[in-house]
Structures are given as structure tokens and as C-alpha cells.
Length: 85
Image (cartoon, rainbow, N blue to C red; front, side, top):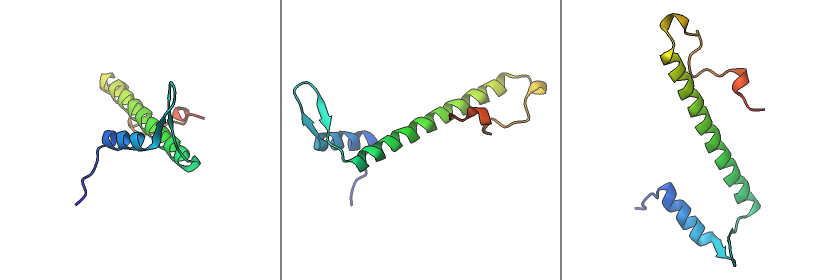
């Protein structure tokens, strides 16, 4: 039975197996497809993080607003102005 690795363990293993030492820096050996996949993964993670922050911020604003002044919009609904173009 194989053991699942944590993200930290996986990334450390990946870096150990796919890097080569240069004089003053470390280079990561990636194919074009791997670089694209890594970029999309990082962008997806950042977008999810920003969405969570936005939802938490709206929820805290709704919680601090008196009940009579609340908007009809739920905290997790998206506004057109929230999208990044």
C-alpha cells in the first residue's frame, strides 16, 4: 500500500529530483508542458485564495452592518466589478 505525501513532501522530492546546481543559483528543469501546468496551478491557487479573502471580507462587513441596512445580496454572490479583466 502506498503512502500519500503531503504537498510539502511532494514539492521537496520534486525539487530534489529535478534541479541541478549552478554556480550561484538553482535551476529547475521543466518541460514546456510542466511549466504551463505549474503556472496554471499557481494561478488557480492564487485566484482561490483571493476569492476566499473577498468572501470573508464581505461576510465581516455584513456581520458589522446593522440588520436594517443589509443588502439583499448574499456574501458569496459575485458582482461584475469583482472580476479581474
